[in-house]
Each structure stands twice: as structure tokens, then as C-alpha cells.
Length: 84
Image (tube, rainbow, N blue to C red; front, top):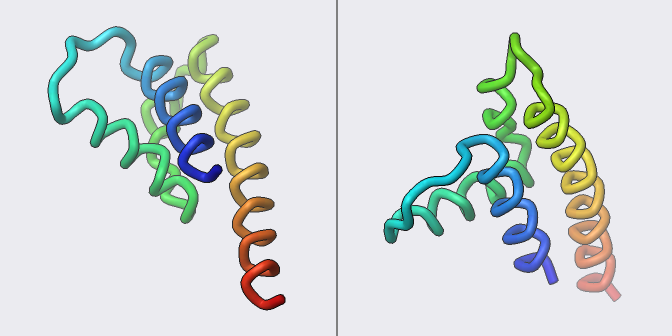
């Protein structure tokens, strides 16, 4: 279930930040890295929009807030389930 949220957030935020890019074999790795490290608070994706928030910047910020809330709840529920 966590993989579904990582991929959903990664693909949508990567496309909003970088736009259309030609497919290479490094692209899936970049998408997963972007979303995976943001679980642990590595929020460097918003540095690109630091001074100039446009519609893409606001959309990425809203997606990031929702993603962090859902992933945090999922991780806490998994931790509680492991201790039962």
C-alpha cells in the first residue's frame, strides 16, 4: 500500500516540477527517489519554487502536504500493527 502512495505522489509531483521529459531508464529511479526521501523529511523538491510560486508550485505543495499526512498515518499504523 505504501508503494502505491509513493508512486502516485512521485509521478504527479515529478511531472509538475520537471514537465515532460523523454523516457530513460534513470527516470523511474529519479521518481521513486524524489517521493521516497520525502517520507523522511528530505524536502528539497520545493527549493525549485522557493521565490517564484506558480500554479505548479502550489500544486506540488498541496500534494506534498497530503502525501506526508497519509504516509505518516500509514507508517504509524504499521508500527502499531507490528507491536500487536
